[in-house]
Image (cartoon, rainbow, N blue to C red; front, side, top):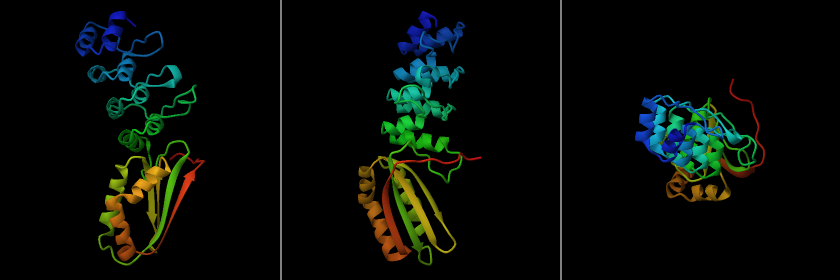
Length: 240
């Protein structure tokens, strides 16, 4: 990597970066650690430089030490807005880190969830899921709230409230995902996933959620059971 290019990137000088690109600078040149300009800018939090490089066609998915990409470096360095920018630009969300325990086998979603970047992890979770009926959760441990219910006859506002509860839950700190299904006989199961028991308790105590639960008891259910558990192991088969 040319010294003037590296200095412009690290200094966050988007004008200089643009000028060097116009002069023929190699956009994906690597430094001595194998990192490209985009990776350096993402890690440093230089949004203007990141946007300039993206507009000029910088490679999104180059990885270097610990298998980290520009997106993953932005997450690790605490720049969720840049991570979101890279994800929306088409960064590969399935890439996994390697080597150090903190990164080994972890995707950008896993790294964001571990750092309590709730809005970003929600965005990345939706991006990595190829089957939207399934929640995409980080590596255990985490918590699951299992709600089984039997519906009474008639909607009486149930559907709108159920949609609102999912919308509200997604905005809560510690929310990881939700899965839900209901059969023709009225029996249904909803499983929501949370980072810890504190997040579960906070959701239970949310004022709007409390009103919905009371409405469920009086209008929507003939029977329900709620079970809260800590998930210790998780495995499955990817969507075909």
